[in-house]
Length: 430
Image 1 (tube, rainbow, N blue to C red):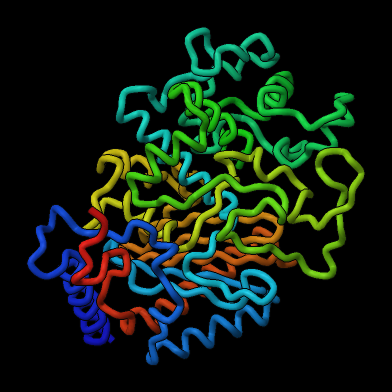
Image 2 (image 1 turned 60 degrees about the vertical axis):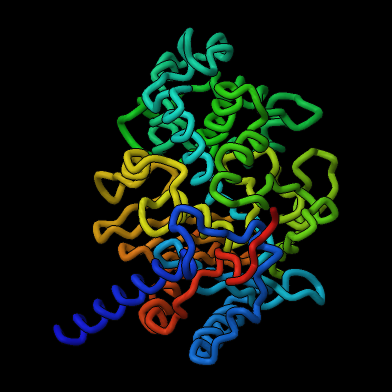
């Protein structure tokens, strides 16, 4: 048993070394790797048609059949090198899922927002321990609406770690638009400013920093803090200052309806048992839950981003302090984002950092489920699907178990290459 484990570790280390060397290309300066500029346009399913991995593909297809998934996308990265990227099933009627298909990533969006906050801290434009609602806070204009004085103690760190005192015990304000409209006599859905003024007029469920309860509203506040600190719209600033430097040029804030989807975006499905619901805008129109049941766009940094699995892996490569890709944040920021004291404490942007050193980020919305699982040896598995299941948020745990199983069986069969890099002989654009 010990010898087998030793051989496995040696093989993983050897493969990682080969990937590190291969990622720079023959005769190329390690300081100037030539990365593919539009990875979503470049990748094809055929690039990952690998005979030895056909059993893995069969397992994934069987998994999709069991759970009724129309489509799923998988990317596998190790030491910042993309080893495998493939789409399974359909992204729309008559259209196959590809490695470049964009999908809603739900609460995985929080990892992007947290990274944006760390970038701003490194630039000296804010501090994680800044209070938001004091007279000098980034969101001080909302102070007159505060009824619970404890709100003025809320810091950016509290919001990042879900320790602010905002909870969903009385309903998640980000997913209760129709109720809020009825309770407040509004004829139209509230914008972010109106929603914040309303929530601040209610008491916190606990004092900031004394407990931990998940809050989507907290990440809306973080999105607004980014806008206030930078003077730019959240999406535009994130694309320019976080995503583009990470090599991610095709991430966007989602639209609410199928007809407004992005050119490369998947369709989303709900199962037959999931009946139509009233549209969030109060129009009385009945719609599929995934297309108008909630105001996805207004989630902003809490859950509104769309991405391919491959670009999501590329973002992780830029915030992991490992491998060949240059990070967009400092080692100190990476350490701060991945530090947690116990299983009940959320990390900054990540859901969980296990005792074994596994980083996990999950996300679920009606019609989609997303998972990032980053292992201590630098191997990262990213799954995104386009179909809702009865298990809801718990489905990401099931997919996490699938990732563990597939990694155990097929990790050593993954090819030693880096699909993030331009093929040899391609000098790219001048």
